[in-house]
Each structure stands twice: as structure tokens, then as C-alpha cells.
Length: 418
Image (cartoon, rainbow, N blue to C red):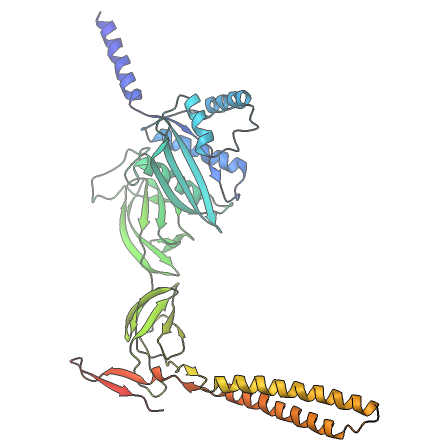
């Protein structure tokens, strides 16, 4: 009787332990970039399956059972291949056939070699995403540590584990907070940042580009990350477990005061300052400019649009803006072109008439004289039009300024004298 009761308790505990865990079918990763071989995708999928199972929060269907069920469905549905279908409509029926509670769908997308691994956990009954994760990595076919780190990061997000919890689950050594790890132990550490960066440990470079994975001896070490576009970050860290270290690096952009001037040194107010199409504010004023987007455009009515580049170390800039010009005799120039062209064409026609008169022994001298006169006047009209169209004057709107003349903010109107 007692043995039977113990057996029932063991069976009940086993049932509760496993029944509480959702059953998940892990689908093959969809590589939108087409950068990776089928073998690499298959191995990466298997790694995701193993990491998800190691989290202890899911029951994961093994690959062989999934493949057998897939082949049976292909034969039943008379489809060419289920491997080519990466949409939920194709994958959910497979999950149902496997009696899974959810399916894990993953996608890799890239811009150049900068890639993103995205995954979502889809509830089969409701056909909605219940959880997900994303992680960036750099694709290098000769060094896949960045991809491996991304896989672990995504599974940690989906399993809702704390930082480093999945990695440290295989290591029992974890001292209290503030206590350094033993120098005799080596830990697996993934270094990452919000920007690709080099990693230095105690002054020695260990990674050319983040994310990367390194073996680090236990104890206190100085960690430094540097990037071309970000300010370097440095921190002393106690290593006592396998974990992921992420630095949020700040942009190395600079703050600069911009005061636009005329050629004679007068301050121009109300100048719009844009970064691309984004309005940053008006000058004179101070602005923060990113190191990777350091070209600004200055605009104000009555002045030519001006582009300036902010270099590291620039604190105060006084860009000179040229007055916009207008053509005051544009109408006269057009009239000169039109009338001159008509008269010149008339002269050419008259010259042709004179040549015809000469062929029939008629006095053509008068006609020739008239044609020369018309062509000469026409050329003169065209030249006059060219002269008039070349004349430019500053627009009237550029002549008025309002300037601060005292520290208290008093203002006075001023008319610029040309």
C-alpha cells in the first residue's frame, strides 16, 4: 500500500512538472538574405531547439519526430515540399499534427553583413504571437560566434530569463554580489553593444567586432569598448559566471554654436537648421550633431541655401550666407529673345526671297538690304536679351534684419546697405 502511494506521488509530480510546460515545435529558420547554406541553417535551427529545451521552460519536439510527421503530411496533402513554406498558414497545421501547443518561427534578415535574428512563439490554438525576441549579429562565414551569441540572446528573451541566466545554468559557481570569481575558473562571456565595437580586456584587444564570445578568467577585469562613431566606454567588472555583457555606447557627436553672418559680418537671424529633412531649430543657436550625420543645411528667405559640415572639435561656427538674387529685367530679356528671334528669322526669309529674284534677273538689291537689316536687328535683340537676363540683384526681403543689441534682449531693426 505504502509503495503504491509513493508510486502515485512520483507519477503525479512527473505529470505536474511536464504538463505545466508548453509543447513547442521549432520550425526551420527562414534566411531572407540567402547568405547562409542549408547546412548552416539546419545547424542553427538545431541550436535554437537545444537552447530552448535547456531553458527548462518548454517541452521541445525532437527533430526526427517533426521530420516524420512532415513527410506524412507532404504525402497526404500531395505538396511538393513543406520545407519551402515559411508562413504561419503552412506551419500551424504541422504544429497541430505534432500536438504542439506553440510553434517557434525564426527569420534572418540582413543589410550587407549586418543581420538580425527574429523569432516569435505562436500559440497554435489562437494563432497569435505570445512571445518573441530579436538580436543583431554580424555575418562572417569564417567566424560564427556572432550568430551563436544572437541565438542564445533570442532564446533568453523568449524564455524570459534574466541576463546571463541561460548561459550560467551550466555553471554552479555564483558568489554573492560584489564578490569576485575565482581566478582558477574560466567563464564564457558574450560581449555586445548598441554599435559594432572593439573589446579590450585589461588593455588587450580580444574582439575586433561585437557581438563576440570570449573565455574570461574569474575575478575583476577592466573592460573597454571602442567604436569609430561612439565615445569609448570603460568599466571594471567582476566575472563569476557565464553571461552576456552589453554596453550602451553614446554617440561621439559634438555640440556646436552656429551664428550665420553676411559678407560684412552682420548676424543673420531666423535661419532654419536642418539635418536632412529634420528641423533641428533656428540659428543663431546651439545644436548637437551626430558623428555619422554631421552635415547641416541652413535656410532663410532672401538667402541662398547653405550646407555646412561639422567636424570633431568644432565649437563655434560663423557660416557666411549669400543673398539670394533675382533678375529684375526678366520680362525685357524674354521680349528681346522673342522679337530678336522673329526679326532674325524674317531676315533669313527675306534673304531667300532676294536670292530667288536674282535667279529671274529681277533687281534684288533692295530685298537683300532689307534682309541684312532684319537679321542685324534680330541679332541685336537676342544680345540685348542675353544682357538683361544676366543682370541679378538681391531680393528685397534680404535687406531687413532684427538684431539683438544688448544682453537684456533689446532689439532694433536694421536695413543692410549694399
